[in-house]
Image (cartoon, rainbow, N blue to C red; front, side):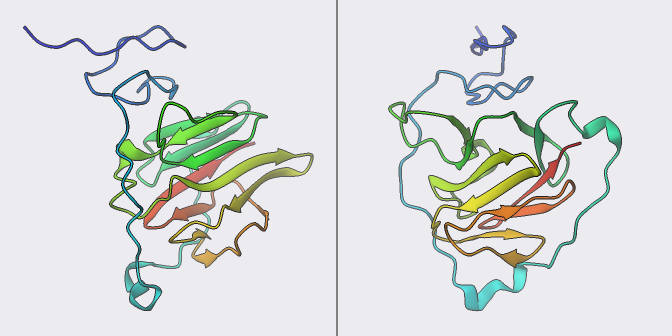
Length: 172
């Protein structure tokens, strides 16, 4: 008998067995405890695999009606951030409290050097901002490394690199 996946508490659709985030709406699913090992540290001297990336153009169908859409570089949707602050990283345990935690573990976050609390995205009147939370491997926008704990404005189409995981951000 094949194992059944969990039903999303948000959109009520059944997911594949072992899914951590709903593949339909991106909401976190109740599941097994997450791996809690330390973040892989990458040496900046060997950053030859980091290619300077500029903002990308995407079809309007990918841009959410409201909020900021976060996609993998191949346009696989990760989540949509609304008005609340969102922490990008890895969910270390079920005891994490407050705000939206965008768990990137299903996207090889550990192997790509994403910290548990890597970066935060928040909205202000003039747009969305990202702040590196003093992560192990840093945060980059279009190849430019951010200073820790310093908010930087995001433009729609920017490529955000958390360690070696590239994400695209899109909004109206």
